[in-house]
Image 1 (cartoon, rainbow, N blue to C red):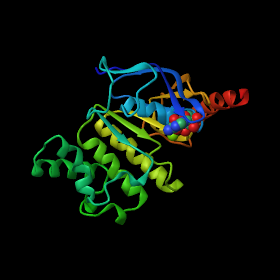
Image 2 (tube, rainbow, N blue to C red):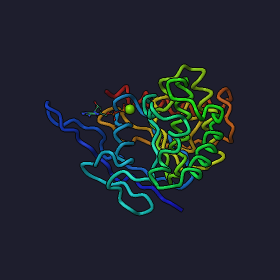
Image 3 (spheres, helix red, strand yellow):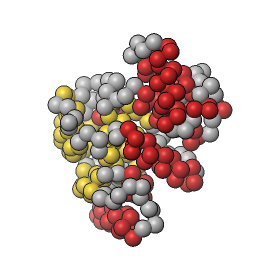
Length: 253
Ligand SMILES: Nc1ncnc2c1ncn2[C@@H]1O[C@H](COP(=O)(O)OP(=O)(O)O)[C@@H](O)[C@H]1O
Ligand SMILES: [Mg+2]
């Protein structure tokens, strides 16, 4: 089993005005095939932490270990999906976008197109394989980004508020689709959101962060069977529990 450790990670940003805390002494662990959500108020350090796990930023202190190996930079063992629709290559079709990582890995053209098409099927976009990003809606572009991140079979999928810029109805649809994709792939996922209902819908466990300078406040397991019903009493109770953790800390600042 591939254990992931986030061990006492801090990052300070150097700015012209001095050093600003990005994230402060954050720690948690996770197991293979777990779906972990990180929730916290805007500016608490969720993106900073995810970028450290991705290897795009180096922590000022502490370390990330994936399968015991310390993260020192970005690698193909981690796939990333951001909030921004502009993360796709505009000059590549959906299929070519999804095949990108495989191309980097040196997979031959026919094989990578076959794998890419399978990933597009997984996110129900096989009919749009030859479309360019600007012909796709925001939700569709995010589905291509998910397919692209999954295509080269990373050990860990990192997602930073991937549906936050979508309208509410599309967002609900995307959450259902992602839950389905996860059921089929059992990827290890770290999913950042400030949306508590989204965390309860998706996660096995939720890591709750404090406001800036953010650290891990507590962890809440979500022991609800899937698919989950956002209107069930148990669902709403979990949601309330998370809201309570978040508002307790808001009251302190
Ligand atoms: N590039 C940067 N330079 C300086 N400060 C930054 C930078 N990126 C983020 N910060 C600061 O770090 C803190 C955490 O930011 P961020 O990780 O983006 O939070 P979140 O994703 O939870 O909204 C915030 O106070 C933010 O202003
Ligand atoms: Mg963020």
